[in-house]
Length: 478
Image (cartoon, rainbow, N blue to C red):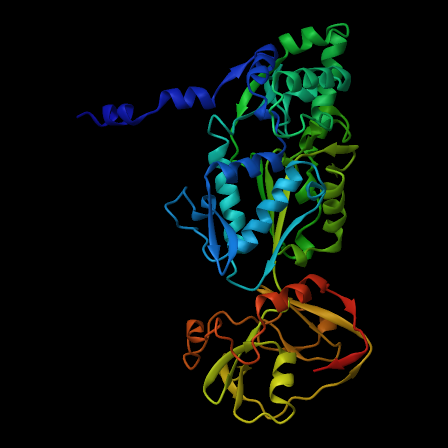
């Protein structure tokens, strides 16, 4: 068999044509009258995506729980499957459902917060893979548009919903018509926002050319096309990771001026001379993941505040731009339990838990400590645990896997094994693997309860109440 013939037989040209669909604005209005689901918000789309893979109800210790098959990773044969977290995933899906019905959570950042290995990154990765796959299905399809110009097709840089091309009055009339045609539709048929700066500019120019005839503009200068979300192509799915503060600023979120095009168009406030390619721009209609969101510089938090609460972003030189996307952040909990060993028996607890359990003169207690001479972590005998009254302000030191709050005079080790104080702002040394003397974590009987171990129910309220830098209440410092 000819090798090319083998390739031809495995091609799915019908699927390619469906994903590459293009049509007129009138064709798109006709599609919406048959099926209004392309108008869903990002929260509505993600919620429907999860539900579409099925739900199982089961009982555990007389408590009814739901298991969402979506989190079994049907995309890569279970490579990122999540087990044992049905209760937290139920809360996540419930939040998405409330946001889908516009009950408030849609104006909040979704924060996954927990210790290392608690599937925070895996959940984010699954949602991104799911969106890519769902946008390629008939149920999850969505659309955008491009302008026909002399230089060639000009896509909307933020892959916006084509219905935004209509004035609000006409748009709302059409949405009311859709509501009458589909009274069983589960979500409010609403569409908020306006066109991005590039499309507003193109619309003004097009209306001037056609004497204000919007129908003619939509007929002759607009082409609607199918939108397929892709993280690698930076279409509808974005990822942002904190880096060195000196080499990173908010333009990575909201775009920057293209100085080469400034010379062409003569002004840095011309939208054609601006790259709307920040992570919040390209993630419109989908999801943006913020890795270690709690380590972000304060400058980024202002952009996130308006992006989450107002669904708007402010690009340099332009008015606020409307967005529709899920902002999903995750970060390691600062109250992550630490490993200790007492008379050869391992356990997990916090530093305060050590003091409460063993007192000031612990016998047979060992913790992992860094040996600067050997440059490795070793089991080290604890001679004493002391605490003293403290009424000042706690400072935060960060490392790759989380954050630690200490008093200002607390000495720490940096990445090179050198001693520093929190005010110096260096990155802490992080333990990447346990030494050979440490028994593997699965030997710790968490279910039965290890003395000093803080269970999830106890950690959750404490984690939720902590801030990265905060005044310390009257009490003790260890």
